[in-house]
Length: 193
Image (cartoon, rainbow, N blue to C red):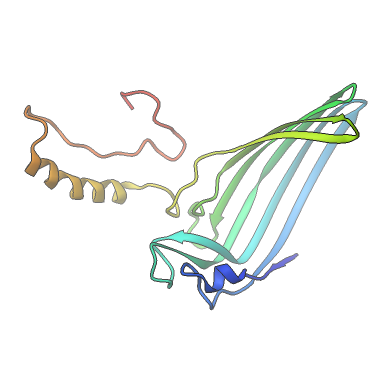
């Protein structure tokens, strides 16, 4: 179980809400680790249920700004972590990857500003009496809107931009204006996308 009180900044800054409730959580995790000499592999499955998750959310909240801190009534962070490490001589290389489903339990939608995938890779090396550690972390796309981009967002952009294009007429030939999303899991990589 866990308990986390909102910070003073989350409660009293321009983006804050003085009525934020503390987070309460129940965390369950099951892990396996295999190790033979200098090699190590691990897997962990987890489910964290959080009541009153403090989130920085765009377009909601009571602070009067474009983004505010607010409580998400019931949030769930569930997923799997795969990890590994290898040591040769004094050097240790390690890494992990997380596949997670961070979602609002009531709506089922992905939580804002929460990635579904994380990866970490690093190297440790003792030298001159100090244990040096270099690490790289990366995360998949995070969205400012719960659930990501949907058809209503595309429609809103189309309705806002289409009249401007009609008025300015930047393209002299006939054209068809279309707004679409690549989807939650697909990045735009080619001009045809």
